Length: 424
Image (cartoon, rainbow, N blue to C red; front, side, top):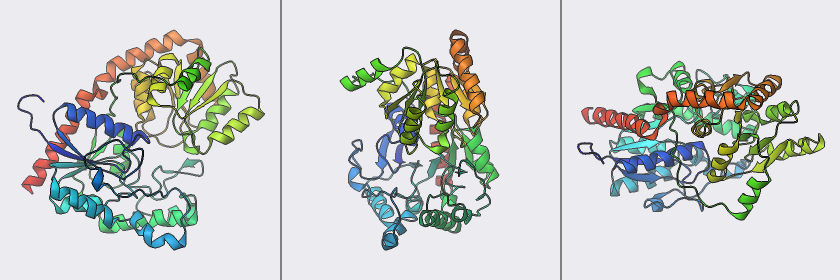
């Protein structure tokens, strides 16, 4: 820790304490950077067998899974889905033992719920929150329904979640709408001192939705430092060995909003270009079957891959393709590709243009398989030119995303929140 910089006790709260997705990847990278600068970290999360170790794990809420169907008999238990008294009680017990100077919220919905924000406020702890998704304005997180961007709930008209059925079932959609109306009525998010937006697009969405501009600060997404490479298992070594010498790649959840089906369609137009898909999800099996039926031998499904595998893949790929149909926020995978010098081909949705532009990327219209195929073909046939462009762009913008600069910006947010709360 540098001399003169105050040491801060920071509570990091996220419902998963293992690397399940982008919010966890970011949180752990931020925690490492904060610890490296001498701050003390506390954690609050949900119990799970895959969790990383934490000295606060005894306070974590019991494991809950809301992915399955919601049944009427379980409605009393699902009240926790909206406002968990148990989470608030467990956090309050932790706060009695060790009171942080500031609390940083990440993905807290459903398993933790904003009840913990109220618990922190009662103790006088200032709260900041990173906006990893659109949950504050969209009951189903993504402003996406039935294959298209969806803005029906803007202005607090959350009943549209039920009429549209964006929760996947009438019962789940009703729960999501109830949750949103409850949070609107209680104004619990008014207790958050500052919201951190990883993309300018996210900041603009929140401000347009009625959050005061001074409460939403855009801090460019963190580019995680490359760690010491972990050893590959024999299966992983075989997986990499079986891949083509040159390929383009997709890495992420294989689901409707991600546009992977559009990508597969694009690859059917350029069958001499291999595509490797890293990831699993509800569309993985149907897409595998479709590729088998069409004899699409240029599409390889590699399944879920550890970060170490992806780092090897980034070093070999000719391009990362991000074909999203929904309004992405600031996916870290784009920055990981940029750091490796891989060009990025992304759609024009959400925060992708601003982020991919900093990586020297190519932007195409979302859902346009022909345009996507043309972009992939261009990168494939002009590899040296595109990689040089990617390196030049990233060198011009990387400082804004480096851990040291990112963490200093986060520390400034913490100090502002602490100062305001003490002055109140």
